[in-house]
Length: 479
Image (cartoon, rainbow, N blue to C red; front, side, top):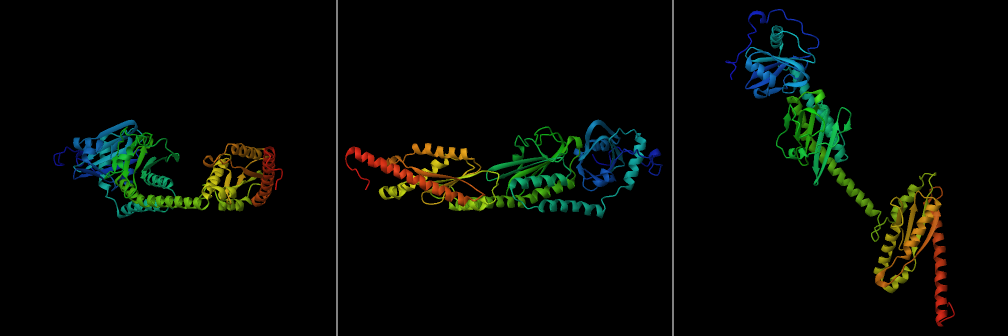
């Protein structure tokens, strides 16, 4: 329908003449929005409250103009009143509103939190006056709008991304704050893994189970944002009731999407400026997420290298360097926490290497490491510090707990076999308490105890061997 055939209120006739005295608006009539119709769309050109703040950044196609479109087509005032905010046009919501057509090109919306009691004739006068004084956005207003975009991008990029998860939270927070949204959900897919973070800006807490249906996965490859000024109940991306929502695909390398919503309790929609800011943030997110991903990969590689440097290649347990690091840190041990050091040495490793070869000796060392690992806690440090020497730091541990560890080692030793050569290896074990955080002194004391244990075991083995030969009549002498 063209504007020339549309019925309209003639504001230049009778009591609606623009020059007539204007009734005073109630104080609770907080919003006046002046829309101009052209090219099958309504553009917000000025007003009061939202009308002034959103001037130049709201444009709605006639088919989607809701109450404003109905008033314009009929040429009569359209009243809306309810207990909850209702969409009036585009991003504008109000509990109570009246849309008043003025002439052939304008519709003025009056919005309030309370019922609007003014008669249509009074509203027509005010609408005519509003059209008469409305102007398109001034250069200062346009500049302020552009600065909002710049400020949002500045807040986004003034951040040092450390992890992808923290960066995703940062992006969602900046976007929600820039658009005055109540809730935000972001989904990022990297290396075949999906990360989903949701935030409720009202409480600054995480949303419970955001995007439970995985709807944002379908937005990841979308060519354009999805803006719904009246959000449908499904899909439920946020897990809370929202009046409107905007979903934006993340541009560039990382696949993902960002969803922003206005809660039903703070109903409003998204202006064209909001949409611009949202798209700008979504486009700029690629760089931050890429940096965070690179940092995570570098950190993982650095940690792997550190573990390899501190890991014994033969047994997979920590090596001498790991023990030296623990010694350096031991000086700062809590003096109120008791700790013990266990020193272990494989008996007869040289004989095994000489008789069966070093490959069997290596098997023996790996077996000893696995056996010892099964006897200690994950929090304890087991390290191979020499060819057949192992040391264990039990921290924390009291004397009875340390003795129980030694007992476990002895029990495990009795069932330890190297079956291919019918070997039954044994360990010499020593135990010492850590005093004043001095791990090296405790290890030296544990070593002395271990070597004393080794000598006792050697004597017992020799006596047993001599006694065995005596009974068979082969020898009566040790020599």
